[in-house]
Image (tube, rainbow, N blue to C red; front, side, top):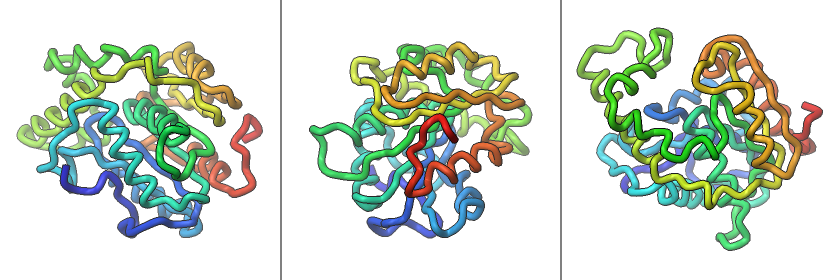
Length: 258
């Protein structure tokens, strides 16, 4: 499927012993938006963005046929690029949160190859897995529903012409189609701390849905909310970055104390 599933600053070239933050973007977006996070968190940690096919530097790459195929491909590159002993924190926003959950479970699986195991999962603006089965069907079939995700303040919708908008909608639809193959059958609870973030004005993810993430870990669970709409944490990530910085510290367990 062509290019790398991971982007970094600098470009990832092999296993790195530094604490690593793995960032999964929302549907329709790419991993390069997390480049400023590397500067914000400093050189003692490593930030990697996940890059699905069909966007940014992977325009010509084919999207996998299934959700599980995509997660397995990401896991393979994480094993190659993150040192076995490195502290690994997984962050996912919206659709990226679902991918991050499945990825964390796969990396923890005793049936897989040896590799780094996430020490914490942080999701934002993301419904729990039980709310995802079939959820993307409306976006695949309905142009109006798909276009509604282009909020005027959205990172994806600022100063773009109609051709670019159509292209971005195509990427968004491809991600929605990929989500349709997700099954909760493989979504076993994790054994790591899980932090769920939401925004007060987010009409797509409720506080009760965020609470539902507690059922998907046997470790500590913490829910946080900030002001703003669905993409608030991507626009103003400072509160989130403060938490991620703590979670990346080698002696931090990632529990409810942070």
